Length: 378
Image 1 (tube, helix red, strand yellow):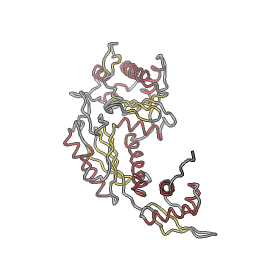
Image 2 (cartoon, one colour):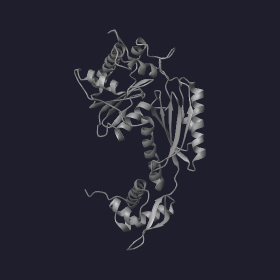
Image 3 (cartoon, helix red, strand yellow):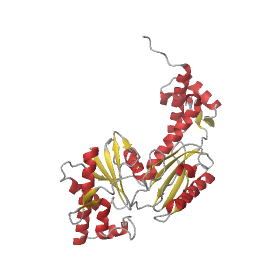
Image 4 (cartoon, helix red, strand yellow):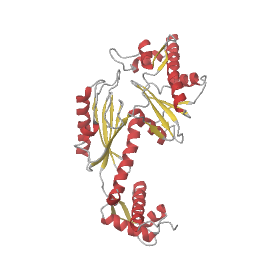
């Protein structure tokens, strides 16, 4: 059977996509340079740039090449809006806009108390997004939100689990951001975004199977398998706080209760007192050694469960106090004695939840721009 040839419309759409992606990566190119970067013939590129210029997706910048030879015009993307990136944490809401090149614009922060409740958190998110929208000239076409609470995979709403330390409630970021964002709103847990950041640009680059453990005011994990974060049926994969492990006195207890037994939780809260953890681990006295050993054993029990179920190549530890070199070393030394040892390393990306969400926001914005070149194919 003779294979079906691709239609002219399909070939044009693919060429236009290649042109747009080249300009997204290099910002400013002549048509001849686009041909070199894409490997597509100059006549075909000239036609594609003409189509895209006519549709308002690319623009002749007015800049020209210099030197010998034919003068070339430099082309760039026309203004096509921004993506909103937002993070909801126990300390506040951070929001910024990013363009198709990944450049940030107009960052705003609204402080929060550790247990703000849904109304206060919703108001903070709306205020931060409105401030970004007012400051930046481009329309917000898509939003990516990181939340320090579990996120329902189907609805994008935050989920309130029993004993969750950051009490926001069942917040709906999509509804809150609707007045500011014209397109989709993507929401996920902060630990999942942090794991994606480490995979894309951190210590887990090139590692398709790893487990990310967050040790901060809250406890959480992310399973990365075959290069993708696994979210589960409801999006609640990695909620490690209630995994049973070994306590300070050798009794079995949930991981979160280990911190209660060590006196390392905030009063009237399940949140871990990070200042108390740092103080308890300071120095080289007997108490510091006992606390570090107890935490390493407890975390090691959780990691043993993660290794049994997910079979990772690497374990990445992040979070406020999880990044301490003594903590990472103690966990690694403890885990090397387990039946299935896996290397334990510290996370390396700054603001990992925002970094991970920012990468996804740029990808989504670029996809919207490319689809707008041929909306009939979307």
